[in-house]
Length: 193
Image (cartoon, rainbow, N blue to C red; front, side, top):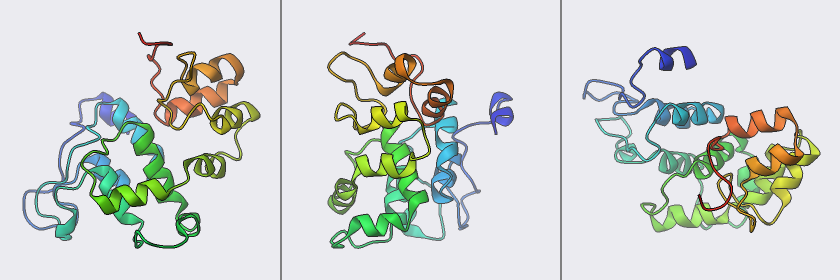
């Protein structure tokens, strides 16, 4: 994928020709979300994919038309927003949970979400999501995510540092590589500037 992108592939090219097909109107990012390939999302975004682009064209499932990548991921939960135990539901769907977390961490616009989608998103316990998904990571990485200072990869603490900055000071090479692969901005500066 890296090679194709480096050699001129249009990152936001849409699938299909306007006829009704399963993925008609999807971009590569929409496909990665639909197929729950959370590891691919940061790569696509790093190469300029529009995280907020909506499905166009004539997909077979017309309810997917005009949905953003985040909305497609939330739709994949296939749960009632009033489900009494969202945590149990999510435990059975670790891939889509990781997709949703990656999209949120990478700055997906949430202002266009419906009220039900906002409710579903709000019910997800992100701190436990980090711990569940990253239990194999080092103590330094776990400490950064358990910290109350950070809710996403892009939050800054009171010293103006994002999780990436903390890991440069306290983590190992694998931690830094991992956090960069999951959407941390390598060029983000400490503080406001």
